Image (cartoon, rainbow, N blue to C red; front, side, top):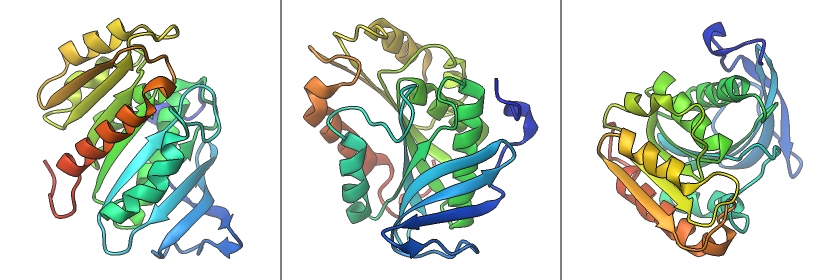
Length: 237
């Protein structure tokens, strides 16, 4: 288990370093357009984040992978494509690399640190989309931060999802493949049953755990959902 834990007030403490394509991220955290990869200093160690900033926007989307680690993505590099597409919708976008993707508490700490970083940049509303373990992390982060305005759960694990009752009216999107041999779709059905409105459930016929067989459908579902709930100027709630 993580030494910081949920009760240890994990958070963003500052920048360690960060470069992308030879461009250094400013240590003071000033907002600039363009993508960066950087390391956040946290009580539990360094958390790596890839981020594309959209100046003058207070909304962002955070994309979380699963237990595979790294900057992994469901589908056919779904997250990589969204990194390019979401800024055109006036949404900043971040991908978080968990320090230890086998540690649910520690990964939640990493997500909360990333939220702290986004708040430093002026982000007031963030949608969080997570795959597999990342789906549980997204839900746990929402229960601990009102900056999280909406949660999307893709091929979600059921362990760590008891906080679904604490969304308090924030939108929930649940997507699962009917042929998931890793985490059965019944878990997402149960998750949706326990959630309050507004909520959506989509079971994708023939799709496995990575949702590669339904990559286009997942992509379109996410964009439509984000357009509905995270469009600029929507405001909280």
